[in-house]
Length: 171
Image (cartoon, rainbow, N blue to C red; front, side, top):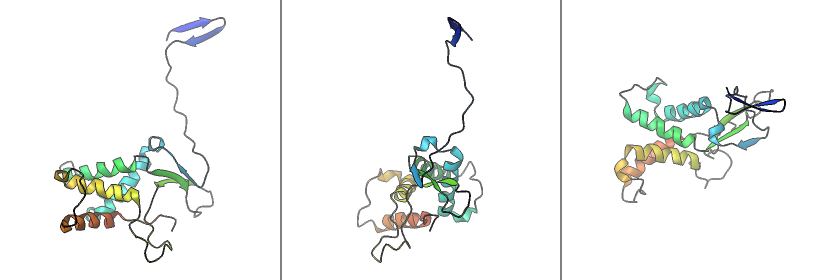
Protein backbone atom coordinates (compact mmCIF):
# COMPACT_ATOMS: atom_id res chain seq x y z
CA UNK A 1 0.00 0.00 0.00
CA UNK A 2 1.29 3.46 -0.85
CA UNK A 3 0.96 6.28 1.65
CA UNK A 4 0.96 10.05 1.35
CA UNK A 5 2.71 11.53 4.37
CA UNK A 6 1.37 14.86 5.59
CA UNK A 7 3.24 16.06 8.62
CA UNK A 8 2.95 13.24 11.12
CA UNK A 9 -0.20 11.71 9.57
CA UNK A 10 0.00 8.93 7.02
CA UNK A 11 -3.02 8.84 4.69
CA UNK A 12 -3.54 5.88 2.35
CA UNK A 13 -3.65 6.92 -1.30
CA UNK A 14 -5.79 3.99 -2.34
CA UNK A 15 -9.00 2.91 -0.66
CA UNK A 16 -8.52 0.16 1.86
CA UNK A 17 -10.98 -2.64 2.25
CA UNK A 18 -12.70 -2.32 5.58
CA UNK A 19 -14.35 -5.04 7.52
CA UNK A 20 -18.09 -5.15 7.00
CA UNK A 21 -19.97 -3.35 9.73
CA UNK A 22 -23.26 -4.83 10.92
CA UNK A 23 -26.26 -2.96 9.58
CA UNK A 24 -28.64 -1.67 12.20
CA UNK A 25 -32.15 -0.68 11.26
CA UNK A 26 -34.21 2.02 12.90
CA UNK A 27 -36.52 0.98 15.70
CA UNK A 28 -40.02 1.86 14.55
CA UNK A 29 -43.26 -0.02 14.16
CA UNK A 30 -42.84 -0.36 10.41
CA UNK A 31 -40.01 1.01 8.34
CA UNK A 32 -39.80 1.02 4.55
CA UNK A 33 -36.21 0.26 3.64
CA UNK A 34 -34.69 -0.04 0.19
CA UNK A 35 -34.46 -3.68 -0.78
CA UNK A 36 -30.74 -3.39 -1.46
CA UNK A 37 -30.35 -3.10 2.31
CA UNK A 38 -32.43 -6.20 2.97
CA UNK A 39 -30.37 -9.30 3.60
CA UNK A 40 -30.33 -11.74 0.69
CA UNK A 41 -31.48 -14.45 3.09
CA UNK A 42 -34.67 -12.50 3.87
CA UNK A 43 -35.38 -11.86 0.19
CA UNK A 44 -34.82 -15.52 -0.68
CA UNK A 45 -36.97 -16.64 2.27
CA UNK A 46 -39.93 -14.50 1.20
CA UNK A 47 -39.45 -15.60 -2.41
CA UNK A 48 -39.49 -19.25 -1.32
CA UNK A 49 -42.61 -18.65 0.81
CA UNK A 50 -44.54 -17.19 -2.14
CA UNK A 51 -43.18 -19.69 -4.69
CA UNK A 52 -44.08 -22.73 -2.59
CA UNK A 53 -47.56 -21.33 -1.87
CA UNK A 54 -47.93 -21.20 -5.64
CA UNK A 55 -46.55 -24.75 -6.06
CA UNK A 56 -47.49 -26.76 -2.95
CA UNK A 57 -47.08 -30.01 -4.91
CA UNK A 58 -43.30 -29.50 -4.77
CA UNK A 59 -43.34 -29.97 -0.97
CA UNK A 60 -40.58 -27.34 -0.67
CA UNK A 61 -38.07 -29.53 -2.48
CA UNK A 62 -35.25 -27.82 -4.37
CA UNK A 63 -35.92 -26.87 -7.98
CA UNK A 64 -33.96 -29.04 -10.39
CA UNK A 65 -31.84 -27.46 -13.12
CA UNK A 66 -34.05 -28.94 -15.86
CA UNK A 67 -37.21 -27.27 -14.42
CA UNK A 68 -36.71 -24.06 -16.33
CA UNK A 69 -40.26 -22.78 -15.91
CA UNK A 70 -40.00 -23.07 -12.12
CA UNK A 71 -36.60 -21.34 -12.23
CA UNK A 72 -38.07 -18.47 -14.27
CA UNK A 73 -41.05 -18.12 -11.93
CA UNK A 74 -38.85 -18.12 -8.82
CA UNK A 75 -36.60 -15.46 -10.37
CA UNK A 76 -39.61 -13.34 -11.38
CA UNK A 77 -41.02 -13.53 -7.85
CA UNK A 78 -37.63 -12.59 -6.36
CA UNK A 79 -37.39 -9.58 -8.64
CA UNK A 80 -40.73 -8.26 -7.37
CA UNK A 81 -39.95 -9.04 -3.73
CA UNK A 82 -36.55 -7.36 -3.85
CA UNK A 83 -37.80 -4.29 -5.72
CA UNK A 84 -38.44 -2.06 -2.68
CA UNK A 85 -41.41 -4.17 -1.58
CA UNK A 86 -40.06 -5.06 1.85
CA UNK A 87 -40.47 -3.55 5.29
CA UNK A 88 -38.55 -4.21 8.45
CA UNK A 89 -41.14 -4.37 11.20
CA UNK A 90 -41.88 -5.59 14.68
CA UNK A 91 -42.80 -9.25 14.97
CA UNK A 92 -46.39 -8.56 16.11
CA UNK A 93 -45.67 -8.72 19.83
CA UNK A 94 -45.44 -12.50 19.87
CA UNK A 95 -41.93 -12.19 21.23
CA UNK A 96 -41.13 -10.27 24.39
CA UNK A 97 -37.74 -9.26 22.97
CA UNK A 98 -39.40 -6.87 20.50
CA UNK A 99 -37.66 -8.46 17.53
CA UNK A 100 -38.00 -7.13 14.01
CA UNK A 101 -38.18 -9.11 10.78
CA UNK A 102 -38.44 -8.58 7.03
CA UNK A 103 -41.91 -8.81 5.50
CA UNK A 104 -43.70 -7.79 2.34
CA UNK A 105 -44.87 -4.19 2.45
CA UNK A 106 -48.49 -5.02 1.53
CA UNK A 107 -50.68 -8.03 2.21
CA UNK A 108 -54.22 -8.92 1.28
CA UNK A 109 -56.85 -7.36 3.53
CA UNK A 110 -59.26 -10.30 3.60
CA UNK A 111 -60.58 -10.83 7.09
CA UNK A 112 -59.33 -7.51 8.44
CA UNK A 113 -62.72 -5.95 9.08
CA UNK A 114 -62.85 -4.05 5.80
CA UNK A 115 -66.51 -4.88 5.23
CA UNK A 116 -68.29 -7.12 2.76
CA UNK A 117 -67.33 -5.00 -0.23
CA UNK A 118 -63.57 -5.18 0.41
CA UNK A 119 -61.60 -7.08 -2.16
CA UNK A 120 -59.86 -10.03 -0.55
CA UNK A 121 -57.10 -9.67 -3.17
CA UNK A 122 -56.05 -6.12 -2.36
CA UNK A 123 -52.26 -6.25 -2.18
CA UNK A 124 -50.51 -4.37 -5.00
CA UNK A 125 -47.28 -6.25 -4.23
CA UNK A 126 -48.96 -9.64 -4.60
CA UNK A 127 -50.68 -8.39 -7.76
CA UNK A 128 -47.21 -7.61 -9.17
CA UNK A 129 -46.04 -11.10 -8.22
CA UNK A 130 -49.06 -12.64 -9.99
CA UNK A 131 -48.36 -10.49 -13.05
CA UNK A 132 -44.70 -11.56 -13.10
CA UNK A 133 -45.61 -15.26 -12.92
CA UNK A 134 -48.51 -14.99 -15.37
CA UNK A 135 -46.63 -13.02 -18.03
CA UNK A 136 -43.62 -15.28 -17.56
CA UNK A 137 -45.88 -18.15 -18.58
CA UNK A 138 -47.32 -16.09 -21.45
CA UNK A 139 -44.51 -14.02 -23.00
CA UNK A 140 -46.53 -13.79 -26.22
CA UNK A 141 -48.91 -11.38 -24.43
CA UNK A 142 -46.04 -8.89 -23.95
CA UNK A 143 -47.57 -7.58 -20.69
CA UNK A 144 -50.72 -6.33 -22.39
CA UNK A 145 -53.94 -6.26 -20.37
CA UNK A 146 -56.16 -9.32 -20.45
CA UNK A 147 -59.26 -8.55 -22.51
CA UNK A 148 -62.76 -9.23 -21.09
CA UNK A 149 -63.39 -11.94 -23.68
CA UNK A 150 -60.20 -13.82 -22.66
CA UNK A 151 -61.88 -15.60 -19.79
CA UNK A 152 -59.45 -18.53 -19.65
CA UNK A 153 -56.49 -16.16 -19.30
CA UNK A 154 -58.33 -14.15 -16.65
CA UNK A 155 -59.13 -17.36 -14.77
CA UNK A 156 -55.50 -18.44 -14.93
CA UNK A 157 -54.29 -15.08 -13.55
CA UNK A 158 -56.85 -15.27 -10.75
CA UNK A 159 -55.80 -18.84 -9.93
CA UNK A 160 -52.16 -17.69 -9.64
CA UNK A 161 -53.18 -14.68 -7.55
CA UNK A 162 -55.26 -16.77 -5.16
CA UNK A 163 -52.43 -19.31 -4.76
CA UNK A 164 -50.05 -16.63 -3.53
CA UNK A 165 -52.62 -14.77 -1.46
CA UNK A 166 -51.61 -14.38 2.14
CA UNK A 167 -52.77 -12.42 5.12
CA UNK A 168 -50.38 -10.18 6.96
CA UNK A 169 -48.64 -12.42 9.50
CA UNK A 170 -49.83 -10.24 12.40
CA UNK A 171 -53.51 -10.97 11.78
